Length: 195
Image (cartoon, rainbow, N blue to C red; front, side, top):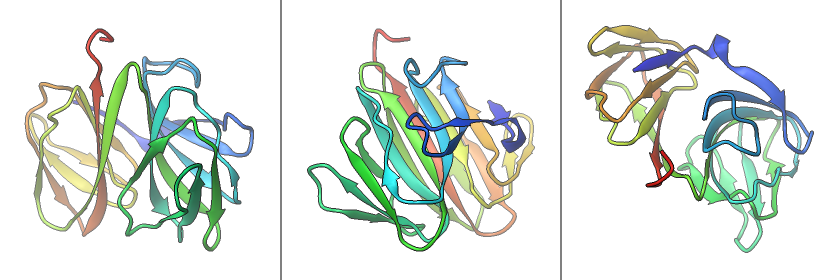
């Protein structure tokens, strides 16, 4: 179990130069945009426009702050992403255009390289102590606005946007929210032969 504090994240330009992304975690450590196995980041989006393309990568988006956006993904009907929406999974290598609903947003972006890993993103609303089981090669737990006590081998506190990283052998953890909050549980599975 490892905690990455929001103050430790690194910021960098989008691949297409249209904005700035904040990298939360990447594997292997220090990997760039063209050679990661998986990557979790968040981005402040201040205007509509095209998404960066990532060949051979699958992506899931969820809204952290703001009113939301409408995505026009090639080959699909437009879809609205709001705080009430389930995270949206789609290929990162098809043309995708975003239109903001009402002002800037911050989104959560999870990407895995198809040949190396897969991922799922679960959004939970919790108001009482909640058990979380890793059940994956790597699990990341993040809350955009919540504060939690984490009961485990060594109790710790998580603040807004801090991330808890769990390995495959991590024990079941109990998260105790200070107040009702949204929680994202990101599970990443490595594809056999890519350990």
